[in-house]
Image (cartoon, rainbow, N blue to C red; front, top):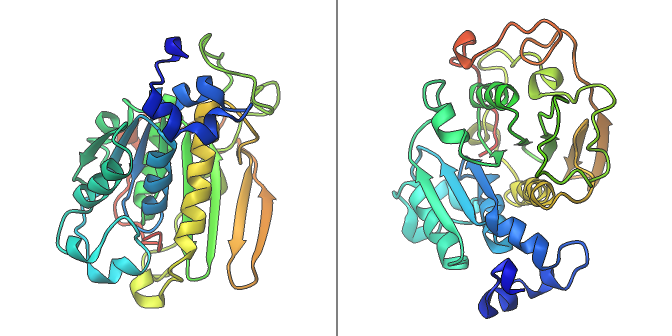
Length: 294
């Protein structure tokens, strides 16, 4: 135990993890040593931040350039009424630090751009995309594919949500220090898909209304964001089957979950056989329409 540097307080805090054979003190240490960048501190980011902090992910980065509005509070659970007008990154960081003093929280009050994506992403093990627009999703995807960074995707609309995981393991050889014990991580088969494989093009601007126009069920992002956090925790632990190659679709009205297989696209401009995008400077990310993930 001492070699794993879990002190008495940590053993108490994470006791329900430590007693599980699949996690144990070794797994908890992996979480404490892990780092996750959460892009968006809104509806999806809020439950993800809450549960990643509670689980003991040692370093959390939070990217968002918005301030808290009262209309956010119906679903964005890391913010309170007293936070209205504050930057979301500050409110979310205070919440996470209050929940678990073990972790380090770093805030980036900025919009993700092609110019700063490398500075923000490259120092983290995993990225959790809780953004609310297609431009950010494609930008994150492209950079994560090009750098081999795992990416958790989630999106919501009214009563529906979707989640998938892109490990961006292109089969070029595993790190000797990585844990390849998770089932399904072998790369003997086809390369896994990326976001552009599943969603080749964004809808035309204005064709998909945002939540301010159509509304969103307040508890919906809680379910979807928690699934994203679950995927990230499993990845850091090296345990379980991820949603790689599968798109999980959730309908809150019917209370149904459906898993749809997704495949890589040989013509994909970033991960295909003849990629056109070799740098985020090769693509345009502005002007895409908003989708309600907020």
